[in-house]
Image (cartoon, rainbow, N blue to C red; front, side):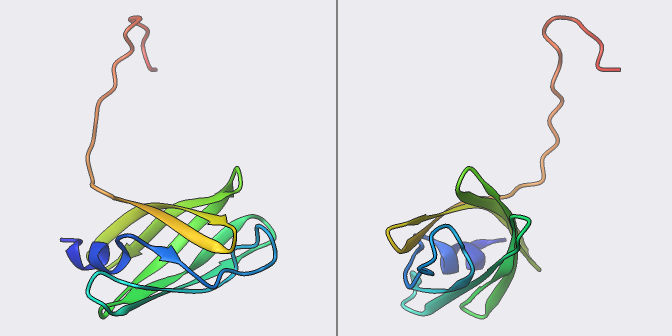
Length: 117
């Protein structure tokens, strides 16, 4: 289902990072697994929220995230589903780690026998 999204974003080490410390605002580009270009545009608000898009191979995903301990953590969502991500600036490069998002419900029980209500 998300193979296209995974293909455009797999192994991202995006170059041309902004020069202003931990401000993630900017446009980043990388070569994807098919030899095409993937482009990510990020906008960081003063409240620590980060929004943007990532596009490649004819697919565009919307980005919603927030600063957490110096990294950006959030979700990339498109028509076919979404991905969780974490992005970190390191010496002018943006490194992005991705995890495919699945819709799964898990019931967690209290092992001490306490009621959740």
